[in-house]
Amino acid sequence: MISANNITLRVGKKALFEDVNIKFTEGNCYGLIGANGAGKSTFLKILSGQLEPTKGDVAITPGQRLSFLQQDHFKYDSYPVLDTVIMGNARLYQIMKEKEAIYAKEDFTDEDGIRASELEGEFAEMNGWEAESDAATLLNGLGVDTEYHYTLMADLTGSLKVKVLLAQALFGNPDILLLDEPTNHLDLPAIEWLEEFLINFNNTVIVVSHDRYFLNKVCTHTADIDYGKIQLYAGNYDFWYESSQLLIKQMKEANKKKEEKIKELQEFISRFSANASKSKQATSRKRALEKIQLDEMRPSSRKYPYIDFRPNREIGNEVLMVENLSKTIDGVKVLDNISFTLGREDKVAFVGANELAVTTFFRILMGEMEPDEGNYKWGVTTSQAYFPKDNSAEFDNDLTITDWLTQYSEIKDATYVRGFLGRMLFPGEDGVKRVRVLSGGEKVRCMLSKMMISGANILLLDEPTNHLDMESITALNNGLIKFPGVILFTSHDHQFVQTTANRIMEILPNGTLIDKITTYDEYLASDEMAKKRHVYQLSESDAEDN
Image 1: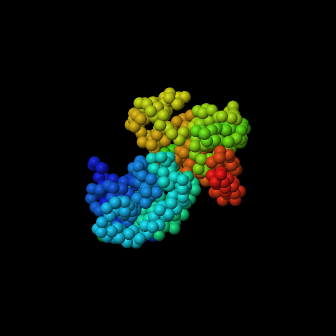
Image 2 (image 1 turned 120 degrees about the horizontal axis):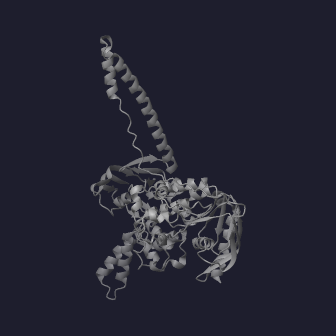
């Protein structure tokens, strides 16, 4: 068990947390939720001991081991992958290294022998002989192939590093597991594996995630941070949402009844306070009136942007035709003979692990890259707005937010442009902020403002949910569901894909395309798709063996 006792954290004059008391018990998975800036990651740092609170303390059951997901992707660059995972149990790794140092001595003494014997005993008690195989099992489950297990961390791609650090956090069956955005940069198979791992994990888990589907799948409880307090609910994210909405409704109804009673008492007192025969009753009503207290209806600190894509022109029947498109990057064929035709009502989700292929395909469609073979043709009535996965070049300047967005608007009126910014939670004074200093989430909201102001009838979005909080993801999700045009997008948010897409495309690792008119859940459950993946995996294995 881990508990926070009277935790207060002040940043300057602002109290991020104020006298927080909460217990997290064994066998439960807690989803820690709250608006951007509410302090979710900060609270995890307090629980893990990385950050000292201004007041209060964190208590852990004696003898229990706490593990957390490291956020510094370069911290272990000089270590091999397997060593990095085993470091998740610091004591076990320390024993392994001390043993190695003793056995490597040329002048091995009696004292060394005694110390080695002590270490061997502790090593066996900690199942040290299974450490490497356990670490390899975690890595393979997350999709880090055996060929990388003895590679230095510095030689891995960013997505593989994330998986290794996640394996490190999970290693050795920790008693308390803290995970801050564990699904970020994970592909679908890795997310599904992690879901099953956490569902079957018998100890304490506290997780921060913007993935609503993930939280619904793994969480037994929800801890909601709002106004410096944490309210605990039994149930997953959807249960929390329904419960919180029901609580608000009940408080409103209770307040309405109280207000009616107050009005009734006030009217009686007003009519009969001067009447001698009714004075006792009027006095009694005054006392009753003084006892009535309305429930405090403090609005949530959560803020939802207003996302509404309105095309300037209705799209025609001819949308997009792609014929025999191929592209090779660094000797790898990421697109191999891709062909399809889009209809005017298609909302296409590109899914699967081949993220480079999708990004390459989107860049080709937007004219940023040329295909090696094949061609594509947009319909004459179409106009496109593009959300790139890497938007850093867009903000590498000293423009203010208002000036930045104005350059993409046909109407060069500051009031008109600020209207779009206001919908995206940039109030008037934020309009003079320089785009160079914006946070990741703010940049995403700027990009979405740019897409809205364009009036395009085709939207291409490459991982738009990265860096967004739950409220912004929900607003974007709803905006795309309402959008009357065509969408091509990719996202790791299961619920986002399931509720938006009516057509699924997957570019396999060999660059070929699976194209299915279906929902995401139906696609995942499809035997046909599973067989196609299985056949491909077998062919890959054969190729490696040869």
